Image 1 (cartoon, chains in turn blue, yellow):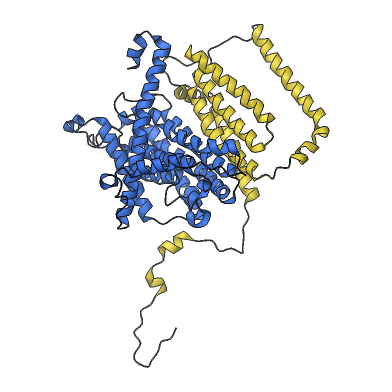
Image 2 (image 1 turned 180 degrees about the vertical axis):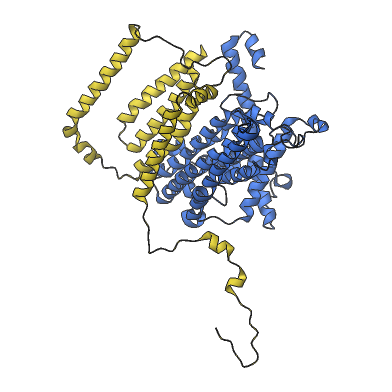
Length: 350
Length: 202
């Protein structure tokens, strides 16, 4: 598509620009719709596990609930507290929302279906997820109110802690795939175990890493049971306390966008991305993008499931889990996997 | 064309946010401007073709170092009058530093314009070789000892920081998760069947 645009009168530069702009919209707009539906799905799953009905009034089966909510927050007044730092107060939700969207630029939706097929795709995702914390910190500070501020401090410590173990979890994957490029990481998973199971997660050496990654992803996106930043029994609504209307909605959408991105990362890094789970030819007739969506949907279900069943961690327990369990474990695993690869793949002993 | 546009965009924002870092009254704003500068410097690195350094800049500086900066600065009780009070005392030294830096900058630009420096490609890698690979091949062969030395220094610094701040507190009873988890009902509850009127001995 980019090549076609470049061949028209627009020329190489602006053709590329226009094509990329259209592709960005092609990713971002369905993503917004997906986020709306995923909020609905989350509420339905949560309700079902609590033996409730969940949203069931607006539209058939309550399917339009998210849109009704969206309309509601859109029509409300944005209140900016008089003591707040105006500019930063408004920038914070925008930043959160933007960071949730830009990560999708490097996610491959199918063979050659990727907006930016860059060599450092994985590092880009890490960079984006580490930027996500700023929305929360800025919101907490700019609100000029004590509960949001506590929440911001918690968020900063929590996200920095779990980023460390996420980094170490990714190293075995990178070593095995021999690349930082997400498309190549997916290709490396084709027939990875016994020649027919697609996905690093099926590998007993990498499966523990996939579990740690999923848990760290929950902590990174501040989802239950790690939602210390918005623990309502301690901090009212955390950093969102002073927010109303669209500025609140942007936090909300950003949070779910981040959750979807983390689900996407889990599927791409450990469970084969757009590859079918088993390397069997009839399965390849199903378009790769559907496999990816199915995997993302499954991991989103796991996120909701955990949210509905696991009680919230205490703050010191959260830190203990990150620094004293995940970090040493993933560090040992890096040594283990690199040793294994050095001996088996590169023949260090022979 | 678009590259030139991107370059001027990033460069302008880097310079402007650098100025704002010094200029803004509120230290938190300063840190945020600094973060913006880091971010756009990463963009400049991308244009140079050094994508690995660009990403590391964002991950390490924006994602970790600046968060801690912000963490500390947010805790400060900012008193502007007090901040300005020391100005008269410090300005001679500060201006000396500023003049030094300015002359260094001038020297660099001068050396560049007279052609003393050979302009080389900013990120010289062999064709088809990615940044990371090229960096790794140099880092783990020729500069291995330097690299390991740097790692060792960081390790010592980390241990030093832990030793300095760690204190053993005797008045708290921390949660021992392993003991809690490995505790079984049999450890706490005993089923007794006393006969009528006998009672039990504890």
